[in-house]
Image 1 (cartoon, rainbow, N blue to C red):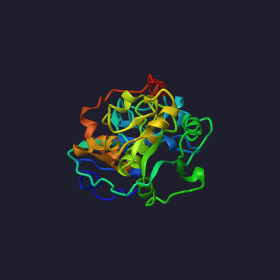
Image 2 (image 1 turned 45 degrees about the horizontal axis):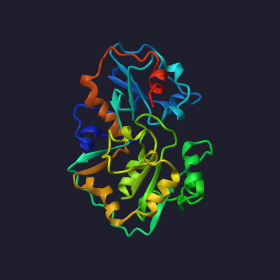
Image 3 (image 1 turned 90 degrees about the vertical axis):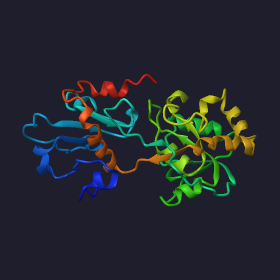
Image 4 (image 1 turned 120 degrees about the horizontal axis):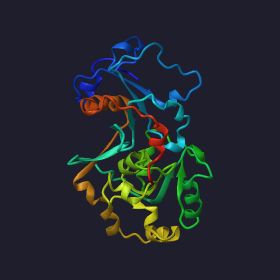
Length: 286
């Protein structure tokens, strides 16, 4: 990524924050960030030599515990965490609702009922089990690599916007794990998300209760299909009332996430160490 110039100030209005990937700056850095995917790669090299006494190390990931391997070996290594979890030291969600953020709602004529975009499909996933049964009650138009109907990045939202509903099905169910499937694919496209993920109460910590449909709202998937099939225009519009007061911000740039470390830095504990980082990440009470 391009780290030249004062990225944090110029792009995100965060002062006194310099990002660098120059390893020669290691001994002069207040904070060093380690992205887990690279940590788990064969041949990855950790810093050698003594660690500066006041330097803080951050463990970063946007993946869920189901897709995170080899965490136990990093016990007693990191001081802070940067993840989608709200209880992280640096909380970096995939998106958030922002009061009074004006947004142009997609006004595309909707001629489809339900769509789903999926790249990685495994039959054992909860979302695959859901889809197999749900699609027996209701036709779902499926796009993405898994269905051999890939969409280019600029084609994704225009295609989804043609549908009333979008299946925002997470690849695994974990606390606070609410990804771009909801924030970008559904909300930015102007489709009502049908979510499969953590419980409804978890979603309602971050988004209005009337902005989505949770698969657990219904006693069976057949009831969910009937609800969608009999949707009136008046009832459908109720899913968009919240947009009169809120807009959606989607986080896509890792540089912004790293700059957020500086915003939190003064208030974070300087003597903290994760003795069991795997235990912290997997113990989520969902």
